[in-house]
Length: 135
Image: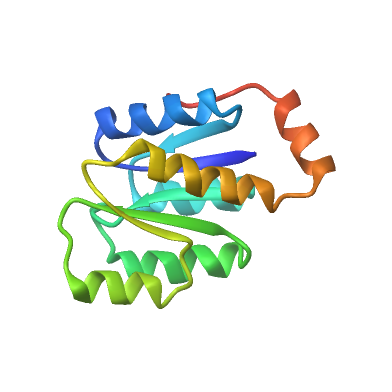
């Protein structure tokens, strides 16, 4: 499975990347909304772990634009500034999981496994043949 980690903090992105590798998935790290959009335009992904605090764009607006590029994109949204309005906004876009930092990796691993289980077997084999990129 191909993942994109859209996260401004290196330490958090590194933890998520290590988890992805441990679970057998390849990933790419991007640091801005623009990089997330370009990454998705260049190569579709199966799951994006998206920080709600990426500078330059509101989370809901970014999710809307990401879905314009790839409507089937599975999203996990993370935040270090939780509030009910943000959670309602992003959940309204059909995300699969909303996690508050510091992340509990077992919760994220569960979301990753769930997403991977939804991918056809042929696609999974192709993803494991490719090498990991990013962090």
